Length: 101
Image 1 (cartoon, rainbow, N blue to C red):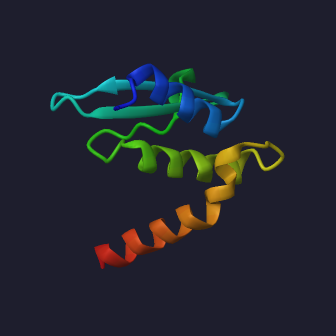
Image 2: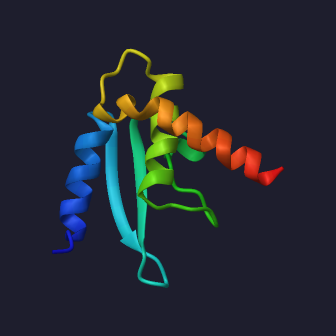
């Protein structure tokens, strides 16, 4: 059975920790777009910092990797289950950068 959008949001929110607000929408191709925003940080125009990147991959892994890096760099004292995957996220980033060369 395929998980519902609400179930996916709950799972992502539980992995992301207490500073995260997770939202899933559908794009034009009916694919899930994950947005994880930080309840403590703001970006420009006082909007919450968010993992959403226009034109980029906004699937679960890409959004969670960006969120993991944000937590690691800006909220080092925060506990979140996703931080267990920091090494894997760094490896994926390294491979992506190597592939662009």
